[in-house]
Length: 116
Image (cartoon, rainbow, N blue to C red):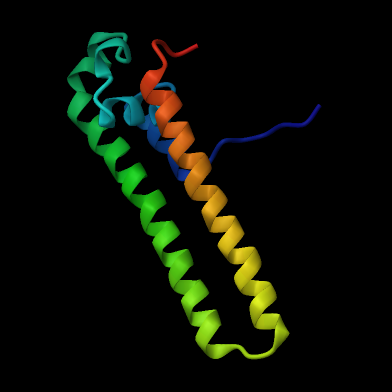
């Protein structure tokens, strides 16, 4: 049996504010689908905080992707030879896939009716 601890920032924050599934609920609120997301009075009272958390999550992902493309630009002007093209290819594919999959995740999340 392996013991795992959820001690990263998300789990600590989720436990402090006592809201399970904080990430998914916050993204739904940020996308305007909050009516079916909040289940009890404690969550309804923290609705504004949960929505801001969701908006910040979306902004963070897109800023990370923008920083990644900045890294691609840096590599393209500072590294020479064939290695430059290998790095550019793999970084470009990686960030493109992250952008596509996160967009699909947000789309499916906005269309889903309930948290199951």
